[in-house]
Length: 373
Image (cartoon, rainbow, N blue to C red):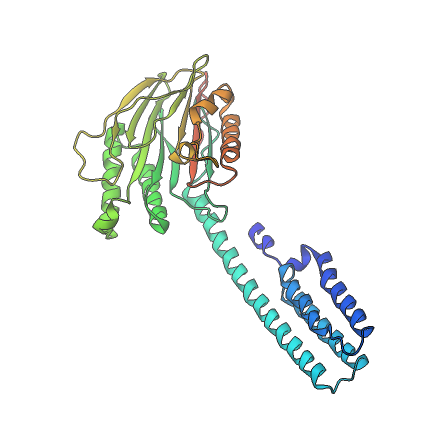
């Protein structure tokens, strides 16, 4: 409904702007009527219908065009007669140009409606594909955010999700390296496969191996050529956060390491053994390993995609994520994510070269009611 409202006839958005072409028509008509017969300002009337489409729809543009033609007829009647060849030519030319401008406006509005529908579908697909993480899962406070590289683009290759297993929370963050709709398909495949299999796999390496097989099967089934295969893979980071132990288990498949924020200490990257990204083959049988790090009450894990650390400012400087995180390390997850999003956009001048995803996970003292994910 909101999308539809954005593309309603622009006449309702800026109705006062219609007075600009009307004022031009009145001004040109008055000056032309009071000018010598050798001076012809009537052709300038075309400015009014040409200006109208910049703020108005087809109906208002047609009305402005009709008013301009009427003004040209009035000028002809008061300034030499309607039957003169010069005035007849001006009236015919202005009428033809006005009709062409109205037709252009109709086509433009049709394209806008099509774009509106496409954006509506994209937004719905984004919500279905990348559902927001709950604010709380068990003893974990969670905040997440997705920053699209382009405002018009609602679907990208970054992804994250979470699910519950036996007394533990399993999370995934990833970044698809495919292009276009292929990236969306691969992201949807990995998210759905994770949600179906994460709770059934005994360890994270088993989960990573199973999902790697899913991704490779997808690339084979959809006939990704040898030339393209090097561009189709997914970096992924898997986490297992038990409810009853102050640790975090991690399996890294070519993804940037998370940052550990601990009270009284500077943010530090978590050292993990990185396996190849999902979809890169052949992969050794023991490539996927599990790392375990302390994750106690008060600690925060910050997961991110390379859209954050590879974002550049006007001088080409990368965004210093670890340095900036230190400013807000003591903040709750939602506040931390909000600050980092604003700071990233300020660093890049509001323009990102790649999508960026961010997930902050904070362990609290008490286990709350588990949220449904």
